[in-house]
Length: 387
Ligand code: SF4
Figure (tube, rainbow, N blue to C red):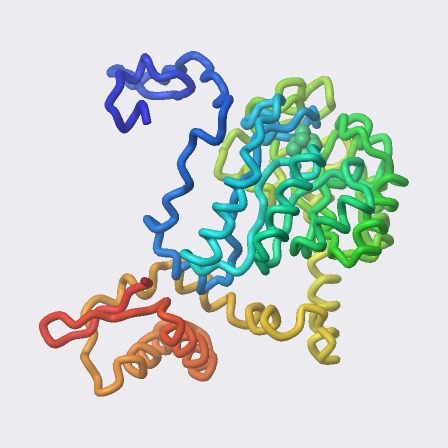
């Protein structure tokens, strides 16, 4: 708001800017917002929401900010602060209700760094969702040492379908060095707890943490496979402000580049003494091969767990992603106004995109039917756009 109100840059806390000589200036640290309820609900209507709906994504929202833990690789607690502030549960559920009824989402992901930290707060949200009779699926990030069966049951009752546990490594020493403060036994216990109440666990690992070797990479893969839940690997990105970056040499981490574009959690930008990009990519490649084989097998068997809606989405998503990534619809410009403009659009997209005519027709017809794609007429031509 300070920027929008044209306050002098030097007087705005918490920003970096270029001065008249082109030098970078940092202002003072900005105080955290104490009362999150002062913030208005996000102006989602300013986005072309149909672009999100075509990808079948969830609405993202937060119930609080901050995380009191101090994992050395984490930029989340650094950005949101270590002192957690919570929103009023009723206002959180107001926002959910708005996302469902006004904006047409049917699932929500709570983007809090650690939703399951404060059980009183989370119970209040779950109870409010149940009391209002809201039916939708939701997911959240969690830590294995912050859940218990009662809490998970309540989450499930209010629509929780997935929790993502940050597990990070299958090697206890690496977990201890990273100050994750969890044990492998605790991980197994928390995974079982969630499975027992019918919540799907996604297990997230980081490769390249201090102390990583070929052997520890294998341990992580084996541990992940032993959990019996979907899992994924991220590559360590030592973002500014994280302890692993600030004390990189103490942790035996060599930072290979400061090209921030590569800090995408998929690119290896560090090495330990015994594991660098080669070992990291090999682990990820093997993981991708396993996933591909499992998905192909399940699809061939017709037993893909995420049946119906999600199976369709899996097939549809690549086209939606490709269209949205390159703004294909936006770049079509004026199109000849055929007797049936939808057919004209399908034919045009089929000329431009390497997907089958049938697949394109299926997707576009469905998006038009749902009101995601619309056209206006100008000078006797059709102009298509995401609504
Ligand atoms: S990784 Fe999770 S628990 Fe650790 S500091 Fe970050 S948000 Fe908190």
